[in-house]
Amino acid sequence: MHIDFAPPSNGTYNNSGSCRQLANYMEHEDLERMVKGIYTEGFFNLTDDNIYKSKVIKDIDTNIGQLLKTDAKFYAIHVNPSESELRAMGNTEQEQAEAMKRYIREVFIPKYAKNFNKELSEADIKFYGKIHFDRSRSNNALNMHCHLIVSRKDQNNKKKLSPLTNHKDTKKGKVTGGFDRVNLFQQTEHGFDKLFCYERQQTESFNYRNKIKNGTISEQFKLQKQEIQSIEREAKINQDRNKENLHSINLENKGACNQMFNTDTNIIVRKQDRNILSNSYKNNHLPCSQISLVPLEVNDSYVPLEKSTHTKKKKWKRKNI
Image 1 (cartoon, helix red, strand yellow):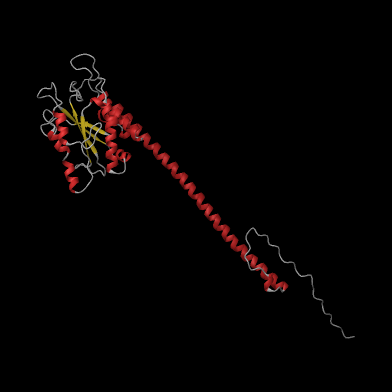
Image 2 (image 1 turned 60 degrees about the horizontal axis):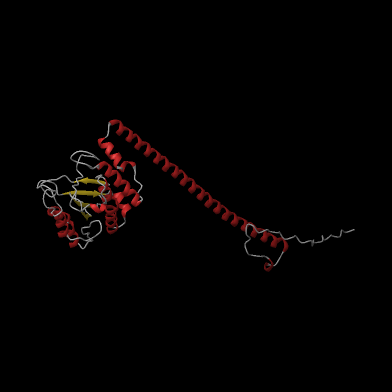
C-alpha cells in the first residue's frame, strides 16, 4: 500500500485557496466512464456515499476558521493499493471500490486522527474521498486508487491539523502533538492486512522499502540477506513439494501397471482354463453341452475333470498252433 501526501503547488494541488480545482480533477474520470457506460463512484465521507461535488467544495472551503490567506486550507492524499492487495479486496471493480471505502473509513481515517496525538477520533476529521479506476501512466492490469481531500481544520472548525508538520508528539512549544507519518504508514498497513486477511511478503512491506531507500548500508545489506534466505527457503519448499508430487505420481503409475498386469494375468489364466477344458473334452469324449464355456476368474478354483476309469481291453491275437 503506497500512501503519499501531494505537495502543494500552483496547479491542481494549490491548497491555499478553494478546493474547487482539485474537486474538478477528481471527477474527470467519471465523464469518460459514463460515455462508455461503465460503473462510476461518487464522492464519499465517513458515513455517506454519492455526495455532490458542490457539497464537497462548500464544506471544505468554509471550514477555514482562523486560517491566514496563505495557510493551507486542505491536504490531498493518495491511497494506492498494489495489484496483489487489490485482488485481496475483491474480484470486480465494484467489490474493490466498496472494500476501499471500508478501508478508508475503518482503518485509514481512525489512524490518521490518532497520529495527531490530540485525542481525536475519526469523527473529528472532515474529509471527502473519490475512487479512480484508471492510471494513465501505469501498465498494471489493476489500477484502482483513492483520492482524499482532508480539511486543515477539524469538524468543529477549531483545531488546526497538519499531517506535513515535522513535529512528533511534542508536549511543549508553539506546536503540540505533531504528526508521525512513518507510524501512520505502519499502522495503516497492519490494519489493511488484518481487515482483508492479507499475507504480506517482506519485500512489499513499508519497513522494507523504507530501509532499502533511507536505511544505512548495514541495514540494507541485512535486509537483502534476509530476502535471499527467504527465496532459498521458498525454493527448497517448492523442491520438496515437487519431490512429493513426483513420488505420488510414481505410486499412481505403479498401481496402474499392477492393475494392467492383473488384467493380463486374468486373460492368460482364462486362456489356460479353456485349453484345459478343451483337452479334457478330447480325452474324455464329453459332449460339448457338459463343458462350461464361461471364462473362469482368477480366484475361481478349477477342479480338473477326473479321467475315466474305463479302460479298453487289449485284444489278444490267437496264435496258430
